[in-house]
Structures are given as C-alpha cells and as structure tokens.
Image 1: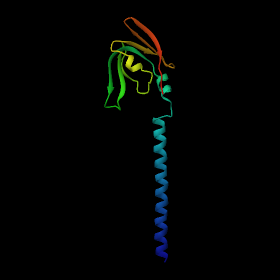
Image 2: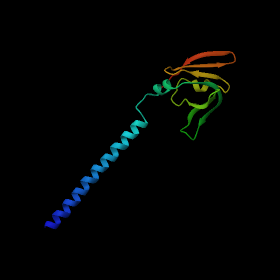
Image 3: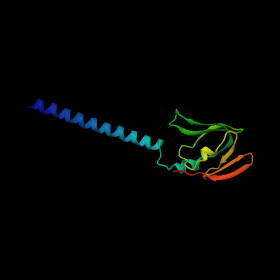
Image 4: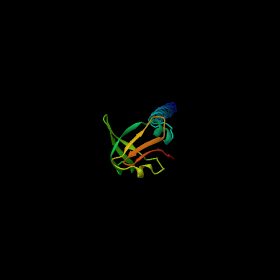
Length: 125
C-alpha cells in the first residue's frame, strides 16, 4: 500500500511539475510573439515609415503573400515599400520612373512625374 501511495504521489507530482513548466514555456512564447508583432493598426505602420526616391520596379510579390511592392532608389539606399494594406488605389497609380516621398508621422504621399506633381493621402484599412 505504501509503495502504491509513493508511486501515485510521484506520478501526480511529475504531472504537476510538467504542467507548470509547460505553462511557463507557453507564457514566454506568447510574450515573445507579442513583442515581435505589436497590436498596431496598419495606418500606424504606414505613418511611422519615411522614404523618398525614384520607383525602379513595381510588382506583386508572389513569394511574400502577394504583397503589392515597389522598389525605390535614392542616393543613400535602395529599398522595397509594401502597399499591402493601402486600399485607395495608390499602388495602381504609381508608375516606374515616378519620384515618390512620404514623411514620418504622415499618411500624405507625394508623387512627381512628367506633367504631374501631387500629394495624395494614403487610404488604409
């Protein structure tokens, strides 16, 4: 009887310790994910970004969730800009060779091409 009690106690203690360790691991994993993917609206991500340059390429990136992507180049860098949550048709309006710029803390987007110089607000869902 005493041996059965000890075995039962050991099994219950092992299950309890396993559940505690599992809970800690899951808690740390969820917190890590929250740090990587903060709960922000798409408009906040767009607003925080700043860029300017000449559009050198424009495509739908089939390997990256079909994101609407443009590549811009200026004297300091070449980078991609995603228009995945922009719903106002701005991506469709942009052409290769356009000069574009967007300031930080703004959703206003300036586009310059031959015969056109305009500022358009980005519409984000």
